[in-house]
Amino acid sequence: MDPQTTLVTLVVHDSPAAVASWFDGVCDVFAEVRGSDDPWSQFRSRWPEAAAARFFTADQATRFIDGLEQLTPAPAQLLADLIVHRSELPQWYATATAAAAHDGPAATAEQPTDRFGWVSADPHCVDGVQRTFGWHPEHYDSHLGPHLDDLWGTGWEHHPPEHKHAWLTEHLATSDATDAFGWVAADATLVARIESVLSVRPEHYPDRLGPYLLQLWGTGWEQHPADHKRGWLTDHLAHARPAGDKDQQVDEALAKELAEQVVGPALAEALAAVPDIADLSAAEIYALVEEVLDTELRAASPATH
Image (spheres, rainbow, N blue to C red):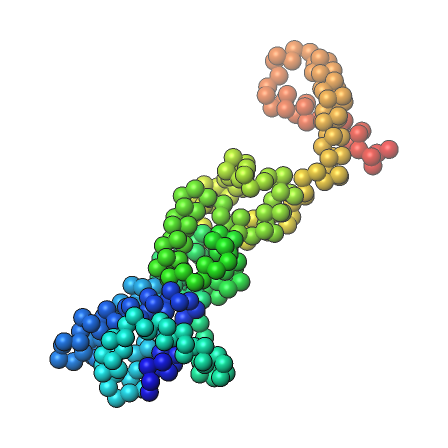
């Protein structure tokens, strides 16, 4: 089988940079082992780790090895032939891919591109995305992809996996260190709800939303998974009245007027009428205040008119 067909059958990547990185790794590893007594066995054992170091998935590495063994009884010889044309391999791949696309998708239909293999290949990166944003691998296409579009601009997929991994790692570290509310910002609906109910915009999260959540959930709330916090806050806000709600404003205005114009004078009058008030205990004074409040509130209630 010619090298071009071999490449398009065994390697499926979404960018020229990824293809170049892949074949550089293959050639480097085989060059290290080709002088051994059994170069194929040596390559077979070393390639998965080398591929992971370049942020390719274990599945991609295994598929490449298994595919070579199925294509030829002498995979080491095929690699030896390919390594001679190392600088030409990415172009061979591009040509073979174009030919396969022209002929039809059958040649590569069983090997779909893993757009986020460079993320899932690193458990720490997977954990960081989940901790910061609450996104599991099944959410990468619908959530992480658009987030990276906003963060890096379109076309980021075409950068080498090691570059994307380094950028995302730095982004996650920065988010952990400086943005305690990345789990909020990742949900546009929740951001809008916070502004509607609490009148808090994103730039005020540290000084206003932070203390609010501390009072609501207690210390240590930051350590919980992002999806848990999002769920709790979403549920809490669903039962809260929006800031600026007309009925709430009326209730607050009525309470203020009642306190200033009715309860205050009535309480002062009641206290002035008590002889030897200094001899009353705290419990007796509280009882008197409660009686005045109850009387005035009943009198002010619309139901009594």
